[in-house]
Image 1 (tube, rainbow, N blue to C red):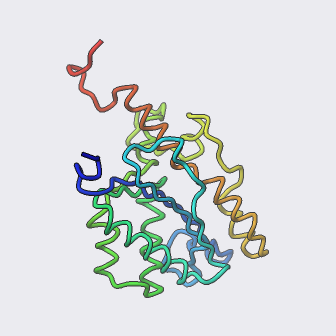
Image 2: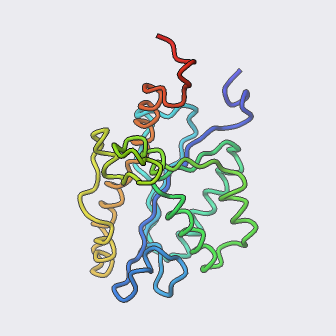
Length: 221
């Protein structure tokens, strides 16, 4: 009997990341999806229907670009793709870095503003069905600070811990490239930032090796 049959479907991984527009006149636009100048410039994502993800499965992400169509169109394409995966995979895990605080709320806000779907369906697809793994929260175990549950670890620090390459520039540069129509640099930035699969795999191995989730009386020599 296959794992698919045992667990009643796929147990896949859906990695996601977005780049937003940071208006010079309204810096809050890059963080708050409901500002007048707010906009998603790019959505990067990858889905794997693997039971146990490893490096051999990792592929470059799909990147939806606002400048090639429109924000509404890339949101529609992304949302429709996610709906299909959520319907097929009842154990789907949505994974990102700090995406519970930023990427997912921003995407939902722009879906609402652009009237891509109704609130009931958005809630169903993003909250009722999928599971979430926030690499930003898990990476706090790497912190040397005794108040690990208070101070977050950024992606650069987490990647450095595992010697995973990371983009050299700040996300603020994306909006500058957008204004000068240097779209190839945006694409390169998105690709360099999308290291979530490798970070997830490294964190999982680190936790298992350290026995983080094992009680002291359960450990064996």
